[in-house]
Image (tube, rainbow, N blue to C red; front, top):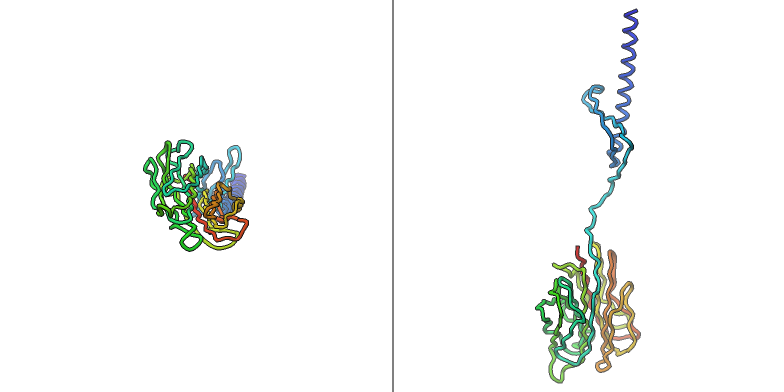
Length: 293
């Protein structure tokens, strides 16, 4: 009887070990699949090393529930960016070689000031303000016709705040002075170190002025465009797709116009275009500015 009992015990142990080995193999396969899929299971893990040689098998016993978390194709998140905003603006048309524009409200320190200007004859020689902010040109001066109908676009970054008056000096003097159109715009939420991402410009003839195309793959951007044509029409131009028209002006003396538009966008293409009523010589300058992180 004793030998028979010992034999039964050995058989049961053998079957138990066989089942344990199979179970551990299944668990190993399951864990391998979970690892390949980039999933994780939260629970208590028991490690068995005595069932198969040179192999470690893990048995996962969930505590209260099983939590699966996918980690497939996770990209590094883009940094959060501030949404740029137009805080104030001032447009002025003068017959003056060095007009001064005072913004209606105090400027906020750290913001960006954009200056757009057009003049029939002459170019900007300097832009200064009462806080000694430095104004950078987006492009070289552009003109719609040979040596006339000039457009220029400037910006100052991380400006000193407070009451702000800006003086724009043109190259022509005396009886050579013609009317000039100037728009000044304060934007918040732009990068303080290097806000300008890219500048574009173009000139041509027709009723669809277009400075060029921007593409953003890095996050929120401010797109700003300034244009002019020489047809003298008093009708307002239409802003480009997704843009808001900010200012427009007819110069009845020189038959030169001025218009600006802006757009806040995240990613994708953006034209710097307008639509005007009459075919005309035109020029457009555009700039893209990066939002602050």
